[in-house]
Image (tube, rainbow, N blue to C red; front, side, top):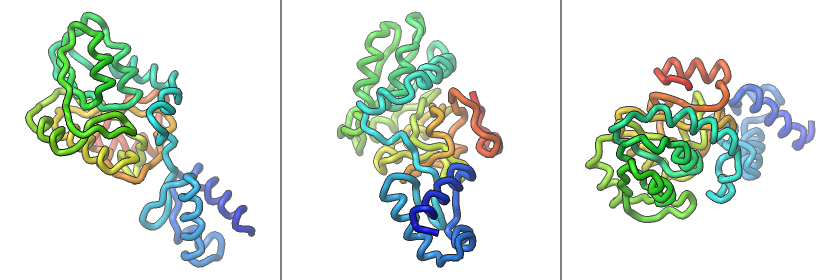
Length: 249
């Protein structure tokens, strides 16, 4: 079998099984694990999979720039936002992650809903400014341009003084083995810290993020209390989420 054919077979297996192991592929193709690892390296370099210890996972498709992501899965984000906004109760303190799904959620807030919103996203804060019943707290810090959110010591120091009811988290991957992931190390740290300051963490994930993984782990699936998505996860992921106590909406 040619190398190109073998790589296509690996990608097909990955799409079907949601993960592949180097040892299993080595036995399947009758090749050394070194040869399989070379295939996986080359496929990862093309952005076609996410390498992990011992094998590979499907790569997340949600890693473009903020401007690019604004036009991706817009209908899905709208459905997710409509579902997620019903979780906010009057008087609550709610943390909003950065990202396009959070921005869509703000667009669906009822004009009469009174609560306190806290975010490290200047663009989300600006969108919230159009809701006169919402008190807004913007967490300052160093601006991470890719997602247009603040990060760093100043932001984490301000966050440490907050106890929130809800945190709406954006991710680029939800996978039964890799857990919740994102494409930037600093953002993963910030998302983990935000979740640590909320009684409940609600993960907002459109279909392309399910059974996908990115390079940096935010935490296990159990970090979330609720997953909001527009389509039901497959049986394996649903079972993994339920086992970790995650409610699926």
